[in-house]
Amino acid sequence: MAKHILVDWHGPADYHRDFRELVENSRNEIDFYFYYDRRTGASKRPGRQTCLGNCEQCFFKIPGSEEQFIPISKAIEIAHDLRNEGYIRVDLTPSDSFGEEILNRGDDGSGYRIPGIGKMAWTSGVSLALSGWEIRLEKAWQIGYRSLIMNGHDIAGTVVPFKGVTRASVLRRALQNIKQWNEKNPDKQFDWGFTFTLRSDTCNPMAMGKIAEWAVENGVRVLRFNCFADFLHNNPEHKNLMPNQKDISTMYETLAMLHVKYIDLPMQFSVSEDFGDVGIEVIEPYIPEEYRGKKVGICRAAWRLFAITPINGILRVVGCVDRMWPYLGTVEKIDGFWTIIWDLERVEEMRQARFSGELSACFSVES
View 1: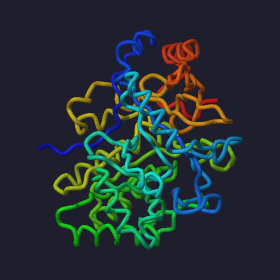
View 2: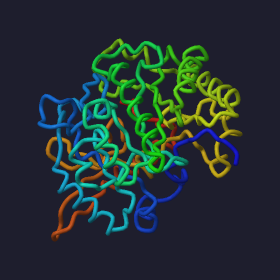
View 3: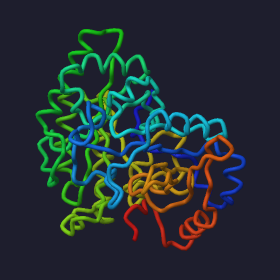
View 4: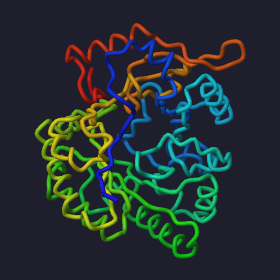
């Protein structure tokens, strides 16, 4: 079986359609990330419920609407009602798949997924480095998770100029615990993957090669790259860290080179669609055949990909799943059942903006 670079896929880029027709006839093909609880850190919440991290660049920290949430029981009720309406791809996306609350409910519903990987859990790594990690992994296995993904930050020796990220020592401890689990449980094997956020200074062969070497040495099953964006607009210095088109083209060239270099090893590379498609043609021969020529790299956000999250007390449907913008609808309870009230005029504005060139690829940093 051929080994491929794993890419994001949220359906065809069929922007010629009227969104009403898409909702009426293909709502089962629309992806929703349900960010029902955006609280992070440990100080404001009892127990080990969140990611226990405090990254200053976390996209959950919507300016003016931080730390908002709805109870998980209500979130499950909402997801159930929306699925019954045909939106079958509404999945719970907590700040950490290993928060005790979500693990104890036993509801996987994970919005964290990459085509080509089994049922996936995302974690900051903190909960798997603390005592009780074996219990958490057992619960995760029973829920159905088979792949564990962490953000690597600076664990591979690359510099991360942000505060609050999970320390490399904690990530190493978490990884060691996962390996220990696999050694003790031959019938309950987890794959592990790491995501690294690339900036303007790391979209190059030297930085990406260093990360890849570390990943190979540590038996990483999936090595994923995503693109840095200053979603919070809270630090002018961060603007210079956002990759430009030349950086992104270099990233794709490097990714193709690394894929060929490690083709005989079991590790697979994965790339987020948030880089856009500038220069993506160099990896086209290496992505799964079913996605070739399908405009991979152009984010389907605000068309076939949305997020649901509470913002200032309103449960909103938003376009970008990272920036939590623009507002394209609300989720409301009508006649005892939860339903989506779409802002069809705004969705149409976004569709037309794609045709005019005002929006292209990832629009998460557009004003």
